[in-house]
Length: 235
Image 1 (cartoon, one colour):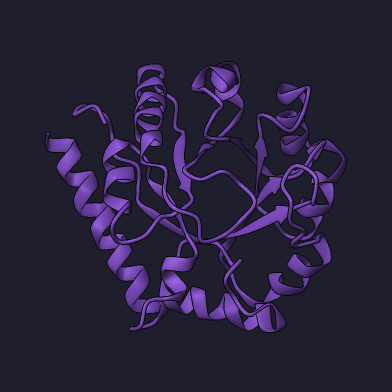
Image 2: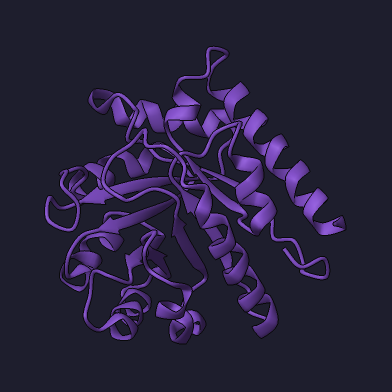
């Protein structure tokens, strides 16, 4: 991250994929108590990615249980067909994949028209140039650090230069854009992602497998990320 770049606040955004689906409302409450900043819903359609996960009714049932921001990561083909349902379900921010729609600019506009905040995601093989001309329509860019569709995958460290390129671009343009990373984020990888310029960190398996519990996992990841961000700012 450029040393003169303003630091955006670190946010921990758990994925609920590893949670107990039979009690998702309680799981969301436990995450809120643990101090997370938002909750990410990994929405999969069985086509853009192999698995099927959360429909809007499931998310709507969990919405009254917590006050946290809900973001829907739409790993679906033709998200423009579904997005209004996820806004109505209580998602505050919708993440649309650049690869999933023919008319990305129009789709991001539809998110705003539906009353939600827009974000765009990039698969590992998709370059930053693919979203360069829609950055004015989003408040966040998600750089996938795994190939989407499965939890528990290994972090792809070669995505860090891509994160750095994106951070330099938004700083150069003076855009108030967060950079999120998703995939393989844990104690050993969060520093590299944050040093490269990410400030919203999605963690799933690393949170749930911490033997000291969710609260420890969240505080540990936050501390590591903030230390890495501070070190990058002074480098």
